[in-house]
Image (cartoon, rainbow, N blue to C red; front, side, top):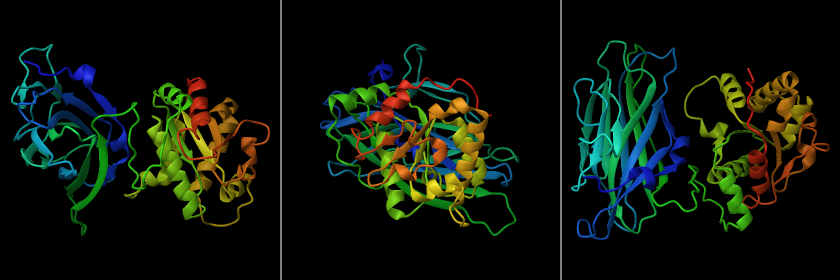
Length: 390
């Protein structure tokens, strides 16, 4: 017997989508509130959490023999949080995809009724060892069954989470460890990071992954309308120069506010942590984006106008070269390049190829939802690009 309707109750949190630990990158997580009688767990609430993550391996890396993915619940002030049940479970061989429901005892059990499904666990291709059910910490250890090792791909896991019924969010600590077949002096890598997952979202605004506190926001009617209209998760790449610490902090604040407004933001500092070809990364980010936000600064202007003579700031030099080249081939792409002037900055620090004096630009007076309302509206009002950039 189903005790809740996940299809109507679930919400999507984009916060995890900015987390990367080594070769593992998190994706959006689904939160499904579960209706439980107060006599079962008085003062507590239960959630079914769909955990999604991606294993991203470079082609030239040695085979991945095993990897371990760990989730730890950081205890909230309101009480202890516990993982009551989880998927996948122990398996020594590949297991077929299976549909599950939550029982009245809050266990995940295989579904007998195909129409009454709370979650689906995809086919597994590795041996799996699970540790921690019934505690605040769960670990999945995946081991390759073939000599070719574990391959890149998407993974899904499920948690039955028990927390205080007054708790609006749960902080997760994520850790990853893995081993490769290599003759080099290489030891398994492990790192932890934390982020808050919204359990009871307000107005559909997601959290961000950044550690700095978010600016105080008091949405106005105008702001809320803009957020709702921007709910299509427009993919947006922020192109900016690393002029100084203050400028980088302001750019991160802009990214955080846009992320909280439902925009799918991509930023270089959110993808740091492992060796990569940043030129290829920039090409992919720019050509796959719906919009490119270009942030004014003295270095950005100098690089864009060809007057910069230094050897530093390789990132902005590569990105603006790519943008100018694409714009030469596709002049109508101009509508998808959004020049932004942050508080305290000048329009004079926008590159001339963006036509700052003769075309629209976006003057951000404050880094709040109200302050970026015009930028969000422009994203919504511009028709989606239906032609490829490469």
